[in-house]
Structure formats: structure tokens, C-alpha cells
Image 1 (cartoon, rainbow, N blue to C red):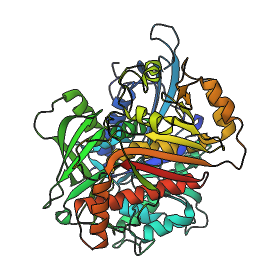
Image 2: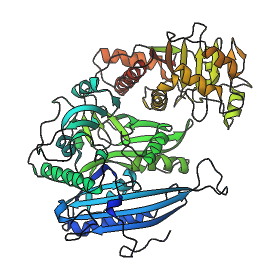
Image 3: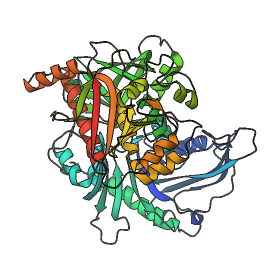
Image 4: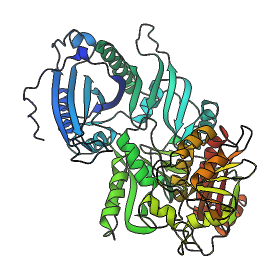
Length: 598
């Protein structure tokens, strides 16, 4: 669309009509003139308002731009509100619903809003169309006169009793979050706290969420709009005082992961994980899933923080990236470039842009550091062996192929364990098909397979392809990332009544199912499922043959002997990931089991 110029007239946005949820990204001006810098922010938000994103068209509806001395509808003067500038932009986005063909005539209409509030050199941005990714990209431009408010200041400014903590490495319940911080194995991503300000008359109090990973403070929906402005003003004043303090407050725990100032001490990258912030928008969540599903094979440099990462899809490497944490605009970002010419540029570029545009990748280093998306911290290594780990024979099966490569869902179900199928799905049928087995592969799946024994034990089986078939392959956590995420995300769907209802209306015509080694209908499996009683066991199994017994046993012996290596570090990290996933599973069901390769 053609954008109106920055001074073009638009209908005036009435602030009293608004009641946004208070969730603001905090920026600090780096230029000499904050008001002029705010004009650049204005132009950026206007440009963002004109980009329909996944929609078909975007139209600016209304705007308000209030400066010192201006009156804003019924909210009073800008000066009396304790801020200096207020900007609001509303837009309309139209697009075709995901369930309709482009020419079907169905249209989705979405109205979206951005509000920016400035107090001296600080700005709070609320936006439903300029998301975290777009703002991060804008801040990285050399001419942008803003940076994020430093995350360490934000972390320690709004303090209170923790009600829920999100840590890099996964979400933790309140009863074990402090333990995870104290043992130095995790860094804080976000915290919901019972905030009690020193000023008894302050509006902002009780449960607020502070997200240093996305430089955001969130509270609740505010009505009327004057309440939003008052609360945002308090946020800006509080952060302003924190930035002017000579020293940071003491950290919430003395043993928590410590931010590393000297990046020259960081060396030996050995693995990466994708972490989705607690308040991630839809775009960031989609990018995270894209990265999780990709090959990410890390080769670190023993003398620096630089690492080479082979990236690709479905067992094929598409190119190599060079990644390195660098200081930028008061934070640390991951510099991502190509190493050489990609073999498959489209796939390699897609992964590269997803990694570079978002703080989603956690990089782990043998030096005891991790880059957690916005800072580098030191962490303590410890390894408690995962107990439910078995190694089985995958001879005759292609460990880098999860399922038959036949295209659409129904064809996959028809091809499993037939016509020379050597995929991991065929291995599952050979291993578990002697009892009751149903393939649930496809969009909206609960698991790749569901297995039932005659005594009522239900097992959700999640399958993931190895990233290498070589017998000398090293331990890596990345191949487990997507399968662990799917297992944890779908854990509540294993309730028998809910599961039977979902499976009674299959998404495809003929789901693959077996009993005693023979094909059956999915209705027969559902009939058996409905016979379960409340005391029957429910388990989760992860099938990931990338993990070799020989590599695992050698790394375990090296750790016990006090020897350090890349595989020792990767095994330690894998133990942590699996233990965390197991805690999530056992909060509802019986246990989590993992199958590697002999």
C-alpha cells in the first residue's frame, strides 16, 4: 500500500476509546535530541502499519501525536500525565482466512493498534502490529537512535515474590524455579512477581511480568486509557531511576547464572537449543518452530565464541552459517552470516533469517558460558544421568528418515511398513505393532503413534529423525529439540476421554492402525481405548536414534573421571533437557522414556 507521509492528515485517534493490555517494550534513546529521535520512531511505526504481513492489505485508520502542552481528549495534558510525547496509530488488516481459497470471497478483518509513550530519554512501545522481531531488526540499523533498556537493569528493577519463572531451558513451576537459578544451570527469561512499589499511592502493583529476554514489562488490561498512561508513566519513572543508579541491586540469588562482560573468554560452542519467550508473539513462535525442525549441527572454535553451524532440512545440509555473539546497542546479539555459498540457498537463507531476526537461539559453550538470546552468562555444569534411557537396534532402517517420503497425509499412512518402507515409522510398527497401535501423524497430531497394551497402558510415541547416520556421530541435543517440544506441548491431550473424542473423528479418511501385527481400522483402536480405566498407566516415549550407545557410554565415563569434552558437555545438556521434560510429563502421567540407537 502507499503510505501517507509522516505529516499527512489522518482521522484523529480518540485515546478515550482505547483500553490496551499493558505490555510494553522499553527503549532508551541514544541520540542527543530525544524528541527528534521519537519522530524516527513515528516513521518506523507508520511504515510497519503499512505492511500487511500475512494479510492481503493494510489500511491506516487513525492517528494521534501529542507533544508537551497538548491536550489529549479527556485524558488531560501530556505534561500532567508525567510523560512528554504520546503516539497512537490504528490500522485495519484484511486477508483471506486460512481455511478458504483466495478467490472464495471470504475476508478476515483485523484492527490493530500501536502506542508509544516517551518520558525524557525512555520510550515504552505497545504494538499489535510491530512485533518483537520487527523492532529488533529496526534497532540493529546503524541510524536508529534507540537501544533496548539493558536487561540486567530491567531484571532487578521490578522485584517481588516470584509466582512463576520462565528460564532459558524451559518453563519451571515456582517450587523448583529458584533451585534451578541457584544451581547456576539456567538464566532468567521472564518472571511473574507480586510487585509492591515503595510509593503506596502507585497504581502499578501486584502481579506483573518482567521479561528481560524481550525487554518487556506486562501488567493487565487497563481501562480507561488514562489508567494505561499512568501505569506506563510509572514504569518509565521506575526504570529511569534504576538507570541513574550507580550500582545494580543485589541479584535475586547469589548463585544465579552470572552475566559475562568479557566475550573474549567465551569459546568452544558445542550445541544450540531453541527457546521461545513466555510472551512470544505468533510470528516468533512460527520462527521458533521453523528452527526446531531444521538441522543445526554445531562446530565450535576452541579459541573463540565463533561457531560454524551446518543447517538444512530432512537430513540434507543446505549450507553453513557462522554465528558469534557480539555487543550491540546495550545488549548482546547473535551475528549470523553465511560461510561460503549455500548448496540450497532458499532453505539455508530461511533458517539464517529466522535465527538472525529473533533472540530465539541459546548457544552453549565448553568454557561454561551460554548465549541466552540477549546476554552471555556463565553457568555451572552438572550431570545427573537420565534414568529411563534405552538403546535398541535400528539395523535395516534409515535413521535419518522419520516417515515415508510420499507427500500428503493419507499417502503416508498407506505407505507405513509397506512397499519396502525403511523409515523410523516402519521401525515403530515392527517394535510396537504386535499389540494395539495407531498412527496419528498429520496436522494437529497428539503424537506420531499411540500404543495400547491389553492391560490398558497407553503410550504416546514421538519420533524424530537422526541428523546423521554415521556410526561415529557425536552426542547432540539439537535432534531432540523438536520431539521434546512436541511431547511436552501435547501432554494434556492424553486424557482418555479427550483422546477418544479426537480420534473418533479422524482428520484423514483411513488412519493407519494395527493389532497383533495386522492392519485394523482406527475405530477398533478407539473402541479399545475407551475400555481404559482411571488407574491405567500412561507413558510417553521419545524415539531419537541420533544418540548412540557407544558415544553416550564414553561421555558418561569421561564425566565420571573428571575429563571434559564436547560430548561430555552435550550429554550434560541432554540430561538437563530430558529431566525437565520428565518433570512436565510426570506432573500428569506416569513417566517419560527415551530410545536411542545401539
